[in-house]
Length: 251
Length: 372
Image (cartoon, rainbow over all chains, first blue to last red; front, side, top):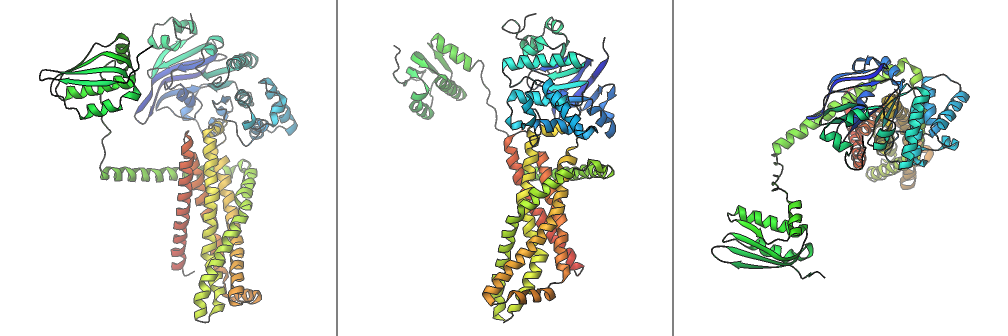
């Protein structure tokens, strides 16, 4: 079995009096495409945000690359952040910069590479995610929804992270673009040896590229494992989520 | 063809029971009259709704039956519906699968409660702002130890947008203030034949108080609001989140460049406003009381001690910190809803202007006590 990349143990999260997570645990291993699933409001995005240190759980431990992220010094946190890339649902591209500049920013901040090498790297990343070469000079507002996702992915991949977080990567894309994006993610995983953690609602994505996932519901973990493993569980939320018996996924 | 004659209700009342005979199409458009009729009707005996001749039913009709059945039951009379068609019954059961409970209105709190709540929120807000300032200064200390993290490019671009681009509006405002002061004073001073004192009046009041205040207020309205809106929009598009995950501290990238740029620019703008304002006064003094420009300037050199000018300029960086800090702080408070950008932009301008005036008052008291 591959080594563990992210380990969540007994995560409890409250917003005021509103309990989001009631003791959630899950394990993500190297080189797998892992999904956080659940209905709206089940706290999967919150869990993702906690993994990337945008929010802290009320209690419980989260280990990323073996480090407890609650007790990191500023410098350690900074180092850890450079080991992962994040693709936000809305892209999160800096709207005042072009696509190229968005990617260049990371190299300029964190490396001492000469400008022409940075330029080559940017072209490579843009090509890698399947954007046309001229996209490098476009501003985020001039991109279509699918291109925004690809540009954001290119930026997430800039520092060659080992870990990639995707927040609803296919939301807002048409079915064909969604499948292309899925294929791209899998290709990148195979090519670059990435570990991918994603939040998604897309049953096709789950079916086609996700290796393992955790299903959240009722503030807890309903099931964790591969699709076959989870579908064999008899639980109303499993049935509901995968629309068993209707036009959803058949085991 | 379905019979779509409008809904009718006939009430056949006896001491043992009341028959409400419903006929026609009980749909939204036809029910107004019946509803008013039922509203004023007082039940005298158990109610039976005979709905066998209802041709059409929609949610409005079903709701009406439900509402008045419940009312009659509350008044102590049994109420039942007989003779309903299957599809109507299905609709009714779909809408009212089980009795819906009345949700009581949230209890209204007394004024004391609201006062307490508002006070609590206000204090909490101050606490949050102090928190923001604290974190910003920690980041600044870090940044000063690592000068390569200072965003010089960003600072210079904010100097242009918040400073240079503001020159025209500052010029117009300062000129008009100079004109207004001159006009008002000349009328009074002429009564004493002391026209020449207009120079002292304009020189001191503008450089010490009015130019800094007017400049700060214009900048608060112009740049303070812009800061809030820019950062708020970045928060909504998840740009701030993206920055954090890349390890770019947003305060380093967004707050300090704006604060530093404004601290550099505001004293310069005040100086500019001083010149234009005095020029405005000079023009009016020349036209209204025939005081020549040379005379005015000669007098000004003697009448305006340098300390007034310096006090005015020194206020600049303080006002700048207040405006920029409030503007950026409010920007970070924007949540994911679009209307919150508007709300916090308004708050930012109002807070900034208030703080500038309060700070100016503080300066006034302090400096007077120090006999400056």
